[in-house]
Image 1 (tube, rainbow, N blue to C red):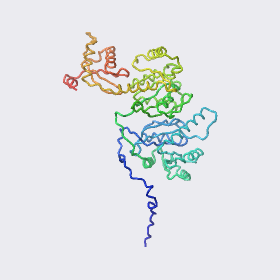
Image 2: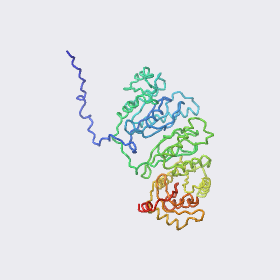
Image 3: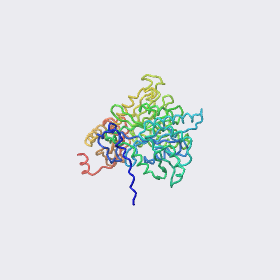
Image 4: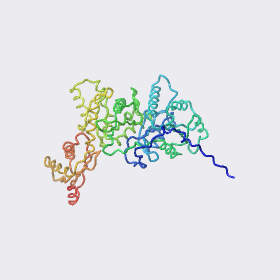
Length: 493
């Protein structure tokens, strides 16, 4: 005779009706999120734990690219590193944090940095919608126990995962973590991908996506990269703009290692700002971590719209400033020369004009780039900087109709006819805009290789001054002219 199956008690009848939540009135969150879209109001998932447990490796695994620096040296990550990531098909704001260190050499600069990292990590835990506590297979350490104790106030939003369990390695010991009261412990390998899908499902199952909204292309943030030599005030400016303390600020050059992202709104426009590691001459970059930091900073040029090139007004220009500027120019980015710490210099229009003239002389053919004085520490000059950034972004995203372009081209050719000789005959026929951000144009001509460089420079200057691109780099390419039939079609667009 079969035993009757024991029924689970029904606790729903024991809940007072006046504390039962009402049915949600807002529309349910979409089940599918296109990956090529940009989203707002994302839930924040913070990865935390002691140093060298694989937090940055897991962060990169989720993001799908090597954004956070990974190295065998403990304590590489200092500032929180953020990125939009897709976890189990759902968009989240993912954050990698610095490792929690219990043992510190009191009185040393490294101890001061460790203390700042811990403070920053604890501040991020308060903001998180979900905390992913990453542990390591093996013996439980004092740092693990101390950090778990600090997480008690946030226990309802903690998920525990034990890393470096590839192939089941260390799982028998890892079960010891259950003694700390975790509801579930997942055994994963961030490097090899073991049980990452299960972890992702656990994460999205604990998050609310009802407020997530897709942001239209026109409303997407202006992406600003703050670049420059070490200790020029990049992190101070980043914190000032975002009204946060996301970037650690100290007098110690090389404090920032990863790319630190933040967001803010000004003048009705959304901004995304990235604070980067200071870029030094290659001969002075010795540590592997700094090498990766510099490469990561340079890589932000591929993703930003505008570069704030920070120049220390006390130290003046350096060769590295020229190299950074050249890299930004090659990618067609808007560039603003920011003379930081201007409050320490002689004030007055004459002093600034002399400094600006010297800067333009040093940077050669970049007279179009704005030069602005600033005190990131005191907040002086911030409005002018952001207003200029909005103007530059408007130019970077401007598109001119083909008919208007060719009317302007005819005027330019009449104003300054192309030079002609028996040896170099050519005829310029028409032009079109081929891209925005970076802004690029193509002019079609017979024998384009015979058009002198000085005439190409003339046309490029006319595009800047007459068409409203006077503060950004412009790309101009010459190609062999098409057939008359193709030309007529182009002119009637």
